Image 1 (cartoon, rainbow, N blue to C red):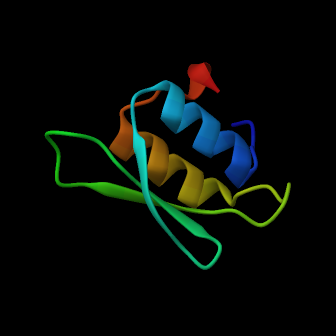
Image 2: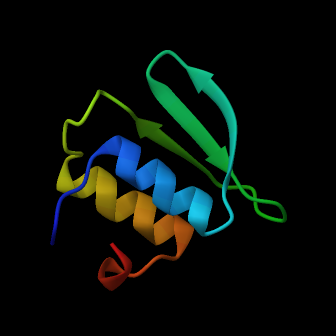
Length: 68
């Protein structure tokens, strides 16, 4: 799996319809209408996200690995 930064994941989520609800420190919290789940994305410059965190966020957002 290709690793991406927190900034890139934020752009991908926004493109898929997720909305930024709040920023708490360096974590951006995204939600989408009609669902209870939220996705917290750590944004630390251009530092890549760890694979487990990335897979979990993609699973919640229902985004395929091919879309990255």
